[in-house]
Image (tube, rainbow, N blue to C red; front, side):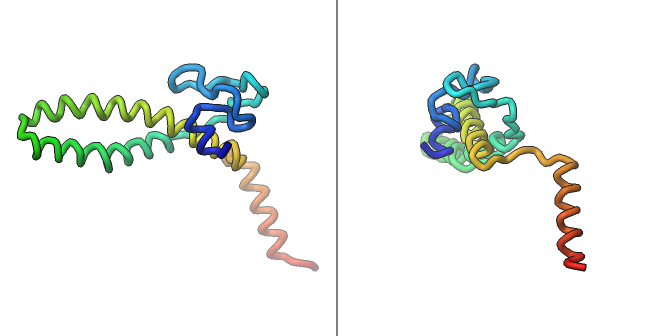
Amino acid sequence: MSAVETGMRGRCPACGEGQLFKKFLTFHDFCEACGADFRIEDAGDGPAVFVIFITGIFIIPMALAFYLVTGLPMIVTILLFSVVIIVASLWLLRLMRGIMFSLQWVNKAREVRLSDVRKAAKIEKDSNEGPS
């Protein structure tokens, strides 16, 4: 399975078998099937940003169209689409967290540390000096 597919299904990105989530938005520490360590998960705000964009692009125009077509009072539209936005956002947040973690796993992405920066600077310095 691809990283996106395992993330969407909430499965382990290493084996595709174990469950990724132990609660609605909380990851297991380890895969039940293969023992992969999920404690490295660091999606940050990425999933939330995608959820905001998706709901803003698709649901808000639907709410506006609903209001214009039905002619119902604005408060009805606000109440109705508030529920739609909350449900869609929670569903999308879980989906995007799984996808982002699976992509992080497959690409071996991790938080940059100071030692990484120093190592990269040393390599850059050595390559600029060339052979002596």
